[in-house]
Length: 589
Image 1 (cartoon, rainbow, N blue to C red):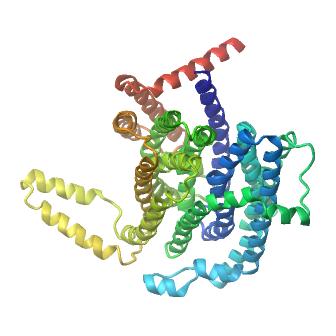
Image 2: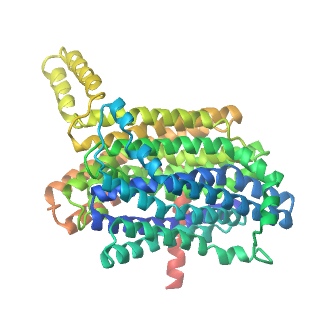
């Protein structure tokens, strides 16, 4: 019981730090939105960010959780301090060398990569779409990419440090790293853009400084575990590449690296398609993506970070493994579902409050909230996927999840094209629903089939041609939501084949109960939202704040009451935690 309480305490502490980090992340994006809105120039920055981000994700992000943390955990518990330090030192040398080499290659060939990523004429002809990039845009793209390529080198090293410190259960300090990154981005953007008038180049420089701080904040804690500094020499580099454990880690990580590469193809396809839409489409999508990642990063990342070392330790104890996995899934679901409900119902006022300042106008708000509403559906799948993938990694199984991930990637790529086309013609579902209702109520449903036939005929035609509406950006969001649902379902199925971790009683039934409770929450919030929307002047910021706060509090209250009525077990953990915080607060007073 004490172990479980300790684990829950760690989760809540990390969630608190991640919450603060996400608030800073929103402030960072608010500053960027204030400076640029959803402009064409900002679209180029997001596109340039794609290549450095892909380098980091492929070389470190996937392999860190898939191989490095489980192996670091295994070595720490079985072989002791000396072996752990040796493996870690070799890991730093190998990963640092690989990232540096790839960054240099990408820097040299950036113009050619840029042409493929956002300017391929063959792809435009094949898909019957056209890009809106000029020669000056491509030059800016190349400059930004080359500056940003410094970032993955620093973040790569920092992430290896994070993996080591998480094995040491230093979750708090590793959670601070992204917080310092966001602080640097906020201050750097204001200084470089507002004061020195550097445009989006200033944001790129701020990102590099943030990456440096991300690394630096972890160094003092890391030093405590070493008697001397890690001093890479040419001889040590050769020895590091001969380390059998390093090759074992790379072998385990290879399938996940392939999966990450595939996921980055999603980003590339979305980036390419976005430059065939209206100016600002990519920025609106990125702003919505950040809001949608709020619950994924806070809940999913916190639970997954704490769970992975425990799952890795108990990979041979099936009963304990199932218990830890089930509790992590149900805890994450319970925490993330009300946030999803709030984002779905209050997407418009939330976007306006978070980004609605300066150059971010009402049109930008509409496009971003439209994207957010469609992206919100994917939050559940992406949150659960983080935990399920950790279960695979703990079992040292990285090939099996590659199949569901690949199917999700292919689904997203195909739907991104067809749905952006469709939404460029048609995005308001109310007319067809009203027409179907009229047919049913007034003419006994005799015309419903004709209405549906007409709709599907139009869908087939619109999905293959590009219209004029800026709402086409919603296709990028909905394609991700559908793909994430398919992916997480298959991940569950394949994991069950590896080890029976889900049952109707412990997995499916609690999920259904939580879903029903969330639907009731959404329905009540929607009615409350409409009631206040009619009575308040929502053109004023204070009215939007009141609307958002009141409806959110009502939703959370209804979710809590529903949890009590339905007997959802996780509510007891939450109440216990709130009571503990409340008692500590009054004791201090």
